[in-house]
Length: 510
Ligand SMILES: Cc1cc2nc3c(=O)[nH]c(=O)nc-3n(C[C@H](O)[C@H](O)[C@H](O)COP(=O)(O)OP(=O)(O)OC[C@H]3O[C@@H](n4cnc5c(N)ncnc54)[C@H](O)[C@@H]3O)c2cc1C
Image 1 (spheres, protein in one colour):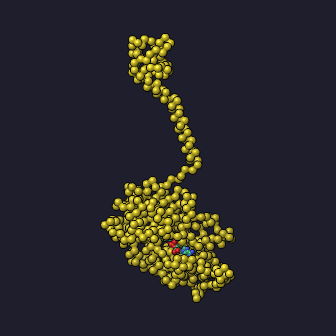
Image 2 (cartoon, helix red, strand yellow):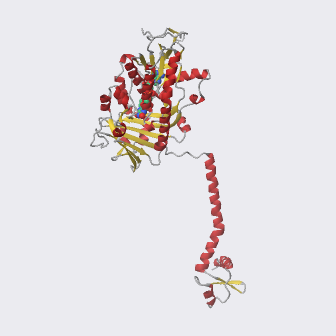
Image 3 (cartoon, helix red, strand yellow):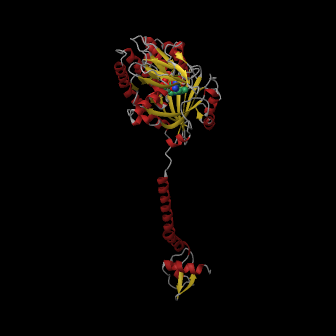
């Protein structure tokens, strides 16, 4: 029997419900906090590794029955690599990654726009920019956490807390007690939702945190199996080169990087013309998986990538259950903790992947939170709140800067869709068209006749008025003076306009 499991009973509807004690029993040794982590993602697992080193007890609760590693390319650079090296994981990590040397930016036609060189990173900041497939990092972190500490198939639904402790409740009706609850349960964090609801009920939640997350992009991510370098010159084992392609006249842009074992990671991003259009699809971002990928793959399979290849060539070498389509949402929440509950990673700040810093920020959060918990003065509510405050103060300005950078990058790399005209634009367009028509009409009425007159008088005819009557058409292309000299054109030359009028009347008869 798990000592942290609360009393349970089954109600008349057959649902298991937990009795919530009014005073939650502390379960720690009185010195170190017992930490309950919701979510075995990158942030949750990294926190577990760090707490382990700090001698702080913890348990992880993961909703999946088995931890699945999905996703595409990720990069780790000098803003997180020192921690891996400090943990002694340098060599193992290096084996999973390749140092990045270039990022080429190009149009869909494969015309080059610019090349960014990164091979001097080690000289500049002491670390290479290391590229790898996200699933590999996830598997690596998972392998470093004691399996006994991870409770699988535990979907956390809610958190409650008081001055003595905190408790989570899972979908299977079980409850667990601890001193601190960490919501590392991703973008749709149940811990965040539960906490925010309680704060909202007490009128303590800022309105900005009650808003829906921004939606504007959808993306397709995947990693190929090992490719034959003869057919795919993209792959090389000693370094990773990246290509960022901006589609010409399409709302798509796509990124590819080669990673170890001759694999290629790809991300295809489509920008919606408006948030409303994105919301229309009524698809939630919480599940990564192959569903709904097929239609997008069909649309983009012929898009070019270097060496005369297409995205379709990469899809053909990826197990389709490893290709995920996902809506990219973003939101920087401002409430990161309350009482004994704290949020890390995507649960606190879901950012666009365009700066490649979403996962790095989750890992950095884990580092700073682990340090704050290590420095905890006591297990009192005040001490814990102070530690949480310290954590947020250290992290928020950095996360804010990364969020802004991601948004700017997204506009540059994926922002090629122009806003659709609204009704006012259509009205303006109509007015412009009418104006143009009016101008054309005026042209026809005034300019054209004078052009015709000039044409006629210059090249064709001169009409002679003979004793007040129209009498003859003179020779073409003759000056009026010459015309008068013709034997059959004895009379005076009429003014130009009269000539034309006369021509109009007589020409038909001739
Ligand atoms: C599948 C996937 C692929 C990604 N691919 C890339 C990529 O290629 N490149 C890139 O830059 N970024 C990628 N990202 C984004 C980046 O990895 C995230 O920013 C980073 O993973 C955030 O870490 P996290 O720990 O906060 O959340 P996550 O890594 O999302 O982990 C959250 C964990 O919580 C679990 N969970 C959710 N709800 C509950 C619940 N109620 N109870 C218990 N457990 C729960 C989830 O199953 C998951 O294991 C990807 C994210 C995901 C989820």
